[in-house]
Image (tube, rainbow, N blue to C red; front, side, top):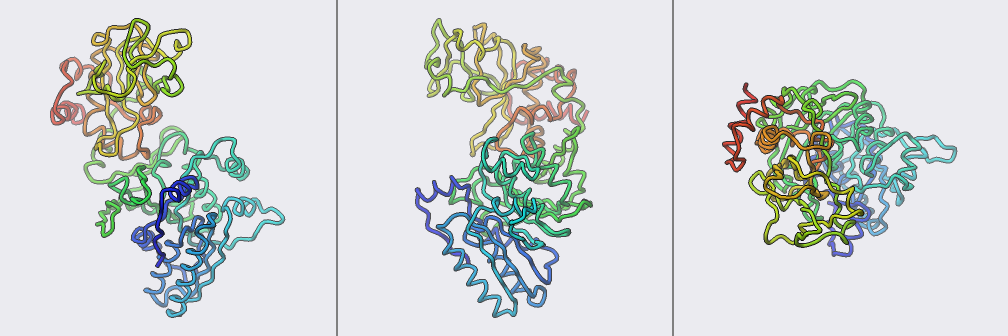
Length: 494
């Protein structure tokens, strides 16, 4: 129905600047299938219409289920002038199909920025456009970071919305425009589910909307494979209501055409968790992940309880470039990258890597270096082909003779508030983070394709005594995965 556009590289770059990622028709059909019930008269909002795939999917469903919906009134926004003609063609085709099925369809297409219309309407400004009381919102919003001093950020703040990404701003505005009982179906990055940056948005979402379904994709790239999107994607169905649904359906699929959907209902309290004054959204993708998450949630400690802290590596390589050296010399200290992770330990120097392996020690770099002591180092990013999210390694100064070290910004490191860890504790913590159980539990609630320091602070850990016991009897960290898991199972079952 909605024609596929031929995309060249320059057009792809332009759409990336706009944050555009088109919804494939088979995904649009799944999103529309969740709407329950179909209203007799639909007031549809599509805040990032693109070529109209979501509108077309809704029209297809309404025409199949004749007699349920009598009228569809579409309000759509699309800022890209290159899409005006394809979108108009899609609407015209929808109208022809609806006419044949006895359904009355009207469309008001805004070739302008959604925020520029929505914000004045919400603020009830004197000359603001009056928008209908939407009872259905289907949206694949733009995915783009927004600076704290940008015009978008200031517009959103004027209606009490604080977010660092445009997609969350779109969703927050849509929530305000929905009528009571209105339904929202969205496809977005999964990053809003946890972490400090999206805390205000989660409070907005969970305070005004009752989540009914969450769907995750097993492949990072299958959904938007034409657009080279590698972040994790989630679909959400929610109703505007302050009364939460006691059950939330969790489903998963590959995202490819013809994908099989696996689903299960879970109690809301399994999915929506509170940590202090924050709320988190956990999405266990299958039974083993759910089991691991529930088991690890029962562990007694946070990093703070263990007397530990976590920081992100201080050396941003492109900013420190004048001081970086490919090979160490008498004026340098080691610089640790993710490339130095090997079999649970930091191996430095390492032959064959293209990154600089040392940083000059001088007054200008003093604030970037820390004492060379025992630390647990965790990758912040994992490659798309890696199956694990959590990857940890032990940094031991006995293996790397120096008194100071630099950690590059692509790693986090766990420390005892500025000093090194007890070696047994560090070994036990490294093994725990490298266990299948920890990785599965972390993936159940982390909405990022990276491991942030805030995520590690909020995670649950065994007691200090249990970690030290495991570390004391396991001097060799070069173990098979099954051996690591067996050690950690003693803690989980004990």
